[in-house]
Length: 255
Image 1 (cartoon, helix red, strand yellow):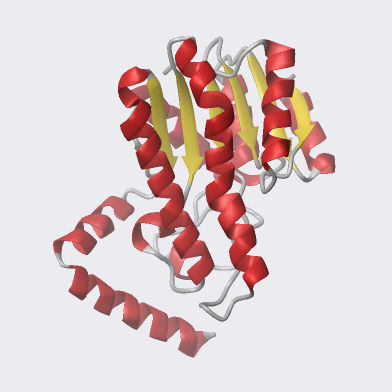
Image 2: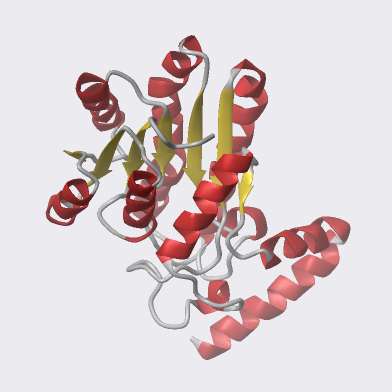
């Protein structure tokens, strides 16, 4: 897909990957861009920079997502691209609070479901569209620092896969963004285990998103090493688990 002339919605757009991608979409000639976030103060300059519409949106609430789509349609008449990008951090294992598990489930999983519920059928009725999900390399490989994050990002990948399986031959293009560490407010310091292959800029990730959309491929892998790690995982699951156990142990000793 070429973005020129398209109408795009980007969640989590006040900073980081969302902000960089909204700016990149504008650079590519998008006809309209709607940026959404809980951070209204940070969102306003992004909307101004892309000559678009800012909408306060809590993606953990389906009604907020429906309102976001309604405002996008009211302003621009349609949604051609939906980038479901918002995310949060939280550490710990099974002992992590129910509040953390619930928040991550809503933001990392149900937000994609609710967005798809709002935009996919109208896209198909117009002949197609593009649905982009931000998951993480953690959705393919897991992550030692946070069970809630790893589990819900796995589910995010599964949502994107299912959408592609169910609607791919009806005109819906689906991509799933799975980076390791990216230099945003969510990745402090050295990036932990996700920083093993370096920390990328949000701008370089946005470049990779646009190129992957142009090729209409499923996985967006700004860190190409992730694909080899995934192959190693599926080639010998027990060996891969052993390696991850060592990584977890090191993280505990350092922490």
